[in-house]
Length: 106
Figure 1 (cartoon, rainbow, N blue to C red):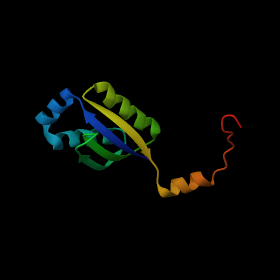
Figure 2 (figure 1 turned 90 degrees about the horizontal axis):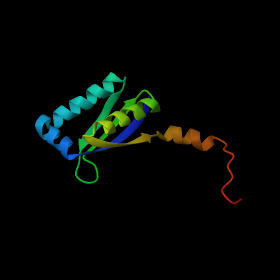
Figure 3 (figure 1 turned 90 degrees about the vertical axis):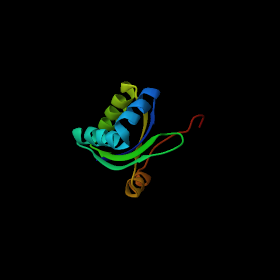
């Protein structure tokens, strides 16, 4: 499973839908979306600031994460910025990999 952070911001139309359905209704829609692709919601919060919604979810893979982001953004009621999250152990494994890289100009 891949863990993702989605930061979503409602458009004017999306905000109207939120006012009509309520926060719990939109959360239920997200749970339904995630379960429909074999995922699971870990956390869901509304916020003030740059994004209206922050959620953390487990999804089967990065392709599924991209598909979710594309579907949400294409619908036009919200924009979603998706970030892949890594565990400390995954970063440890990445740090142990040998990478051959030449910086530009070297």
